[in-house]
Image 1 (cartoon, rainbow, N blue to C red):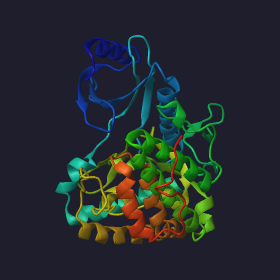
Image 2: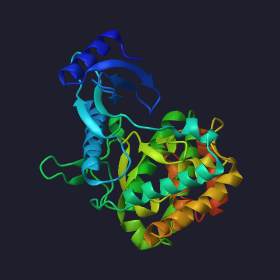
Image 3: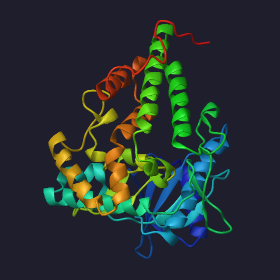
Length: 370
């Protein structure tokens, strides 16, 4: 919640910018606080707060700047359903958070509305997601991997290195190829496993499981359509968290949390709607104990077929969607942050999907970590 002093500072800044605030309330939209503000003229706006960090300012500032630039670019150049940016409130002594204001949005968060949708509305939601995905897929972007920013002079999209909350996870440069990106993700996974697992034996087994999965991926990459591996497209990294606003007819009215964005190879970016996924970390046989699904396995399978039909008009997207299923699921495991001691769930999925090890990249009993 906002503190009283922060409320006063934010409202004062909004008033100075011509927003005549009548009332406001907090809403549960995304990972960070959002306030719905009613204005004296009858309009509704949304104020989105983003964290700041005194110890690592780049970690909070760069994603904020990326999100602001991308929302502004979307409003000018694309029909992708995103919040329409009105004003930016950078952090200050009185406001220890970055914030920005957008027009209000219709609809409700998908996780709240989905259980009430009819079968027809669920199909319409799948088609609406297909329309969103294809619009995003067709945006012309630089052909490297990393988060997006926008040049102030020419309004041109650029790719910047990844930055995270911990210094050792930062990327020093953008990634030129999918293999380079996978190597980076594998290194992060091994560091995280080493930190979370206790005891040398558990750490050895986790490292071995990660190495085994990446060994399978190197072989698997050679079997994929090279065009789908090399072509980079714009992607939203947080759609798996259900960051959508939808209406009762099944139309997507907005996509949220654009601080989580990347340019990715088409083979990774083309994917089914997140609420219909039952593979990889979403497979009930291997999923984390707290995992929840919005839809049943049977209905999800039917609606995935609806989605295939909806995107088939774009042959490139359809090819990436169909060919990339195993790769996307594997990358989902490498990026997974759920509790998985020794990477045991990931190891079982790897065996189930790829079969016995092609070779032994790391011997559990002989692994030495210094």
